[in-house]
Image 1: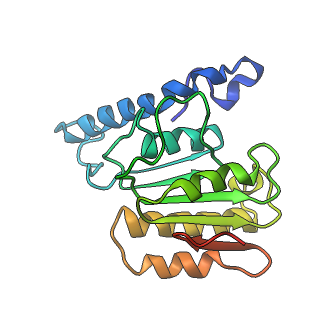
Image 2: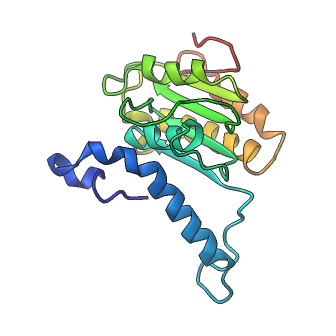
Length: 199
């Protein structure tokens, strides 16, 4: 979704302090979309399954979905899985992270990211003891390269992220093998899970 006060099209006019409202904004939009899907005759009718909901966000969007999945301020229990793409625990966000009952989370991070340094994503990954968690370390990748265009790192990230959602939103058990295979590429990326430390 495009947030009215923080989206990238605003440039210097963006008001980052509004980030604290974004998790609730996302919950509101999800509620409205599910209502439209349940309404016969609506263009969205039958398109959304309320039992198959995932969320992904990059940078400030990653901060937003991390809070939506794991902070007592704004947890949305409808989420089956979340991908935090170069995101962090945003300090002004109220609430406590990872109190329990958190959906599976994939954390992705470029090791050369200077906007959201790797330690920020690692902090979230290490704090999540509640359930399935994964950390995809993208060697030498910056803040945006893994998320823009069709470069090899972006394609790798897309395959791992889609396999993650296939596994945890759609329940496809074999997708875990795809995640592991696609996320471990010598010299390019490493995928770890659970309590395993990243390389």
